[in-house]
Length: 259
Image 1 (cartoon, one colour):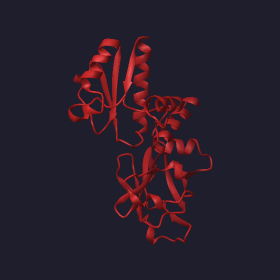
Image 2: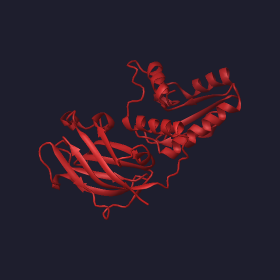
Image 3: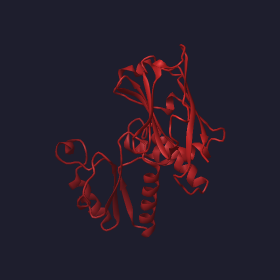
Image 4: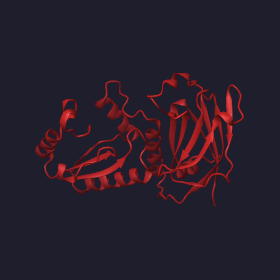
């Protein structure tokens, strides 16, 4: 469902009052509301049973948060066959298709590539009966970018706390018209653990970015490399330079597992 609104937002979104009335009428004593929006947390008093699992809008959730949320929701649903959940989110391959059919006109429910990637991570974890642990770290050894936009001036790597652990001016790197290769020396960047974000900038404006997780990079890629195309990158719709991003752009990340 959409975020329970108040004030002017109530003109185009369902209001808290209407949602509570619906849930109390149809599922009294058997519903739990999950709010995943970090930008708009709300107090537990809004509904009889609610919980916040916040992450940034248009971003992938921290994987441990995704895992905790799924376990909590599953426990609630298994507690009583009449229990239901109301969620501000999008999840699972089939669920994404259903969400797209029910909540959008073009059937494109989840469109953020990193969010889709994390759903695939979760599916991989379940399918392989994995126990998730963020103790797995890796060191990025090199990045090859093909068809890098001319206006893409810098790259930053942020850890799970959104702290910058590496930054490089791409305009000062060896390049030609179609490929730029950035060599990251493992003495210049600390090992990365768990979730991390790579952000490419046009000066101070974000052009595109992506979230990855070290655990799944290692377990799902035996070659110790990840290759991503344009469809795998989170594009910034606010940046007019997007039209200059070549459809053939490729990002190849090489890494080594830390022992």
